[in-house]
Amino acid sequence: MDYMSLKSGTDIRGIASEGILGQDINLTNEAVETIAAAFLVWCEKHIGKKASEMRIAIGHDSRISADRIFSCLIKTFTKYGVDVFDCGLASTPSMFMSIIDLPCDCSISVTASHHPFNRNGLKFFTADGGLEAENISEILGYAQNGGTPAVVIDGNCEKIDYMAKYCERLREMIKSGVNSENYNKPLDGFKIAVDAGNGAGGFYASSVLAPLGADISGSQFLEPDGMFPNHVPNPENEVAMAAISGAVKSSKSDLGVIFDTDVDRAAVVDKNGKEINRNSLIAVASAIALTNNEGGTIVTDSTTSDGLRDYINLTLGGKHHRFQRGYKNVINEAIRLNNEGMNCPLAIETSGHAAMRENYFLDDGAYLVTKIIIKMAALKKEGKEIDSLIAELKEAAESAEIRLSITEQDFKARGMALLASLQNYAEKANWDIAPDNHDGIRISFPKENGDGWFLLRLSVHDPILPINIESNSTGGVGKLITHLVSFLEKNCDGIDISPVK
Picture (cartoon, one colour):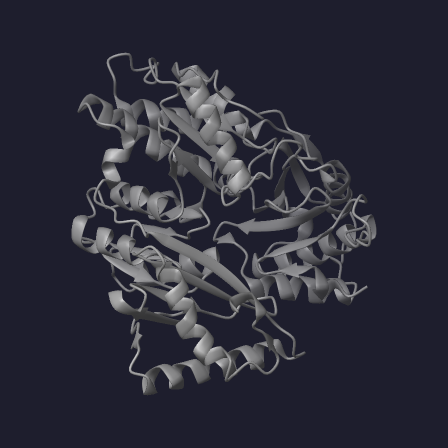
């Protein structure tokens, strides 16, 4: 098989279960075992230990193929002498933390994030964090060539409840952060609804919030179910967000929390059921991160709003640094800036991946929510609600995302050519091109011409040109699209522009 076809950015993903017509399983037992052996070859080269000297922790989300893939990993690792920690059902961020706490040399999360039930994958961690895209390519190259460690020797597998330790850490954060008179029950009197979407995040309600005194009776879909029968476990999904919003309102909770399948992303809703997500979630996270980091830099992806920029720069007194789409791109940029001496406490993507410097720049939805809950408790003492934190955030009147398909085989070359043409077209038309954009072309227009901006960029992996559009005026998105169409109609070879027309 073509192992490189299983590469998905910084992860390995494939079809792991039957159930969707025309989608045949390619993440087979043989493929998983071959990749596992190839990963050990990579580890021997980059970690500097023989496989027989290594310890690896493995956890998984609630997907129906998890047990099968899990067993293949354990079988292969122990064959080459690895001592395996079987962490069972676990969040992806907890698998990174297991390297520090257990400790071990590296870890794997068996997950495919929010993708459909029939998919699954592997996410790898070392003490330096999640692997990069080039590391995944190297591992799959070894797999393609049948690479294995040289020595075959029996290793051990030990079941370990690492999630108990991970949850204890979050509870201690809340205890010390809230510092209430009732120290061991700092959430007594708070009602918090959690929606885990039948993924791996149910632990947050039962093992973090409830022991601290919170009323979690408004929570829903906490039971792991890899068929995801209630809604897609994805904070970017409208149905999912409507579900947690409805749960908060019907249960009269103070806050609602929703996680994606493996808990590396999250969003919240206030007591009125209003979403705090995307730009507003970044605003809340920024306000928290810039506490005691005055003038600090917040790194986001390229699709964030002008209102968010003004909130970070003017209201919070920070510096907004837009970068390329993709959570690893955003995180790596924040790490780079810190290494250059810049005070950068937060990297966050509009999808909900939030990574704080104080937490190893690990994108951890449960950690972000924990910080928000601590802030909520502090605001309560002042007679305020969490939404007061972003009262000065200006939100757009209209927004849209349109995706254009590239029909030419060499889609990257065609996409880059289109962006170059847009740059030239915009300069000749005296359009306002953002000088600080690192991803595609972002162009702003005054009130009479749309009162907003659009961003045209090339997808990292797919033959797609996403267009993000935002206007501060009703009807403005239509005007902004008109400007874009005037360009696209002259430059549409190899691109399906029907979605904008």
